[in-house]
Image (cartoon, rainbow, N blue to C red; front, side, top):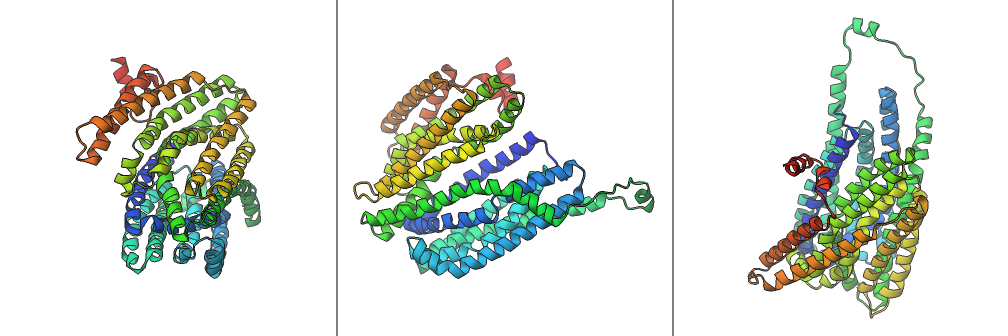
Length: 534
């Protein structure tokens, strides 16, 4: 078994996450060109309901399995680890099969009554087999993570992403002649194939682990006789289930808030647009552009901020155990500063170059207004992950959940009020999402301030604001005056490069980033350390 240290395991998952995020952007660009914004909207409409079902089936199961297997492995009870795996697999298979059957049975009602566009029926049918596949995959991922072997989870996720990209674009292209609904269903069917191959990759790695374990077992009778005999009472299936539910249910409850919020957002947005007098096909296209094209762009820097959150949890937990508030404050300020510094240039580029960016990526400049409105407020999303991670590390997950719930209620109310107004339309949903990101981030910050007396370093935020203005001015000037106007993509790249170079120079001049910060970066940190000493 390839057991890794905590840091190495985290880096393996982080590398896979970043790679998947970058690869995942390929279909975001290519799919709208094949099935159009309306097809993307149909594809997206089925996803929120699917996520709710996946949350019910799996929820906190992977986390619970990882925790229980880690405890069993720590006590040297490998048989107990296998038993935990088998009981969990039985549970999720039963739940997955049950909800798959219900989904197929209720598909006409869900797509015709509950969801706002009945053309999502074919897509809904195409995605139901994934419930069983994801249920099985989640169990094995939790098992491997509990054994501190992150390679199977990371490698299977990368394989799944690659296969999914190829199949969803291929199937969408093959089925598009039958109509937009079938094109969207083809994309979803390709996603299902990717999940299936990812599950097979996990099963093969589990099978390989079993063969390696058998080779290491003593074979001779003498070895068997001389081995120490330890008599232990094996855990019962009932005991495993009780412990599994005890860990998984609270986590599942927290995830259900986000899943139901996403589902309600989908339904309310489309219903509100219909109330504003917008045709169903147009509303579906607008929603597809928002959820399938604009928001993924805004969340692109999320891999960096999520990695900060991952590394922040153990650091804060350790400091909290020592009651070391100085370290907690220091780590929080570092994380927030780095989250803003890493996300700011993306926000500026998306704001200043919104129209050429949407034209280059999606061949659609009409959706650039939504990106331009949302880009400056993406900074709230980038700092939200470290703030939420801090509350969880300091044993306040309930407070983080309550803040998220309050933000969801505000968002739903604003969607109904604004998106149903013809003067706002889809921009009403955009405003609601912006207000939600601001509200949740501020509530997290306020909760953290009350909990540990945390004080934000306002000077850092003033510096970042000033640097963003300087970068934005340079990008705009470069886009208007660099001599590549005949080649829009080169004009975009050149002006973006000029802006990023200016940004990097100024953040070092203002000491928002120091050589010491770079020395802490994994892999390349040692190179920066040698360079700074020279």
